[in-house]
Image (cartoon, rainbow, N blue to C red; front, side, top):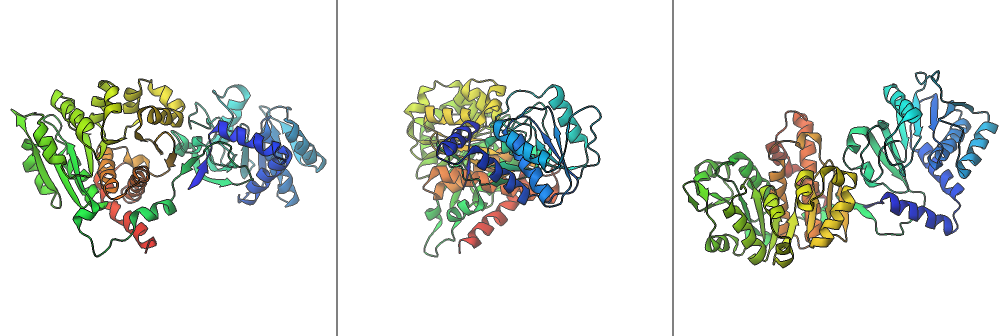
Length: 498
């Protein structure tokens, strides 16, 4: 796992490193040198500098470019400098590096590379004035754009911006920040790398899930085992108004492809004829109805969940009173791992919060931003402003594992938090959440550590989605295309474990 530091954690960690005896000027040099060494510079290079330490990193880069006989110029937004930045700026001037202050006459068209050193990760708010003009001009240029630490204008915690630099490469310094992954980050960052400059976190870091972290979850299976060794799971969904037969089938098939021992798909009895042909390897458990309406039965729910390691509830089940009663029963009486998604989350948001505290199950919630807004009572914009902090707070207060869906996925139990930077735009299609629920149900059934299982499911889902988009394109891919790629993703991890 790779560490991710919030902006505040990085600020404190940077200060602690300096207090521990490493001068800020030395850290600035390490940052500039690391960036210089990791970029394929296309001359001439423009270093576009603001007035803070981010600009100082740029001055170090400029001097190293000069030493390497790569033509470069420094373009200042204004003649204002941090103390350490001024030290390196003066060195650049003495070395004869061309400098100018931005004006309407400034031309960017002649530059092969632009180094964006305007704002760092501490920037908050919206870009305006000269800075917005410069950012717009950078984005209009045909140069290769390298953003130093983070794209200027992009919030380091939320990954949101009204206006920001669109980079070909972003080189983060010290550690990645949440803003490198959250919300609109993927739309404005081409590629990203991180360089270590010797800053150790003073507070607990977030973790970036990587392939090497997942290998242990998908180890080859023993010959001396059977379907029961890998868990019985129950998937509960579907309703009179929303049958979603194909999506429910995709969910069941996703669970099987992800390694479930036995999958029981529970849906209203009237859906049996349309679902059965599509779930050859799963079993169908008919839920009672009265004139097409779902009926809650305590005995039936207990029969369905007996000896089942994981239950996923809510996908297309609707928000009827009967559905709410089934969810309440699961919360209060089921003692396995309970995944609540889709309509189940809507039902949960309408219930007394005390039922979450009283539950007997290990609860995993998988909302997207709008569903999470309902659960927390916060406006969507409030959640987007700091999704990591909001997710951690909710998980801690309610004692749940929360999987918050988005361009990057957040998984947190309130104490441990990880980000899964897998997935793609093509997954914004009907049924993608159902597929994730199927994968998650399976992995939770045969993995003791539910937090790791949840992260692993998000990783598999994201990577399978990426493969589907590669094959079908972001416009034409469907959720079933993601299911069809689960096998290859899981197999690749299994092989690395042999």
